[in-house]
Image (cartoon, rainbow over all chains, first blue to last red; front, top):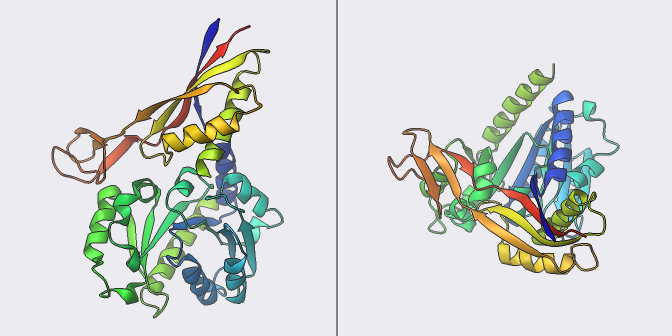
Length: 224
Length: 115
């Protein structure tokens, strides 16, 4: 006899439970936690290198650097002056999940940091499904990728709070239009903040730092 | 790879749900998949077939119901449904859409052979 059991259960409920735990810990300890997502090669590591180099005396920064293979990114961030950088080599998995983050954070006293940056695996599809307990997803795209990226990957742009358009030094070398990418992004997510940066010539990175300062302050206020 | 970990999560959730039905075999698992969930049904089906081998779900199948992206326009209150991006209100053209559906990745039922 066939019996039907009716349930209403999220497939990723275990991930969401762990992510909620992580999120609570971050809030309690006044840590701003950001999940940085992009396609491969958009410049996540370059932007983080610059950020660590320029802000390491102002904020205590911890980074989890996700990659499918190699610890290259983590090494670059350590060379940039990162004090707590944890490589997270997934060995093939296309995304990070909350359990990996919990494990990676073992041994880190959250009270001792202001900012946790999770550099996700370069991929605009799968990481969208896995909440890592972050305060916000930051989606990075770069000029050579084309201005229709937000339309092609709506799930990720809808779930992000900030979009950074990187490699602005390459504007004018292709038919990429800044107006068009902003219009496309806003058509997916009208609340999205947008910043423009170039890690090659430093344009716009100060605005990124201002954005970080504002949100770190906000997070620390909440925990008091 | 993503779909394989989703398949494994479905199997674990299902095993958890049927704990009280000892000796029964799973015949079918019903899923609701939002069009923005980032899951490709064909790839999930393929991953599921491989992942259920040698489990209590061996021989079962997935029934997937695709849920479209739906929302309400914050400007005019129109209820909208979207097949494709961009998400603009068909009535007033606004992009201020509060999405209500589209992210689902839920198990809705499990059919078992009750012994």
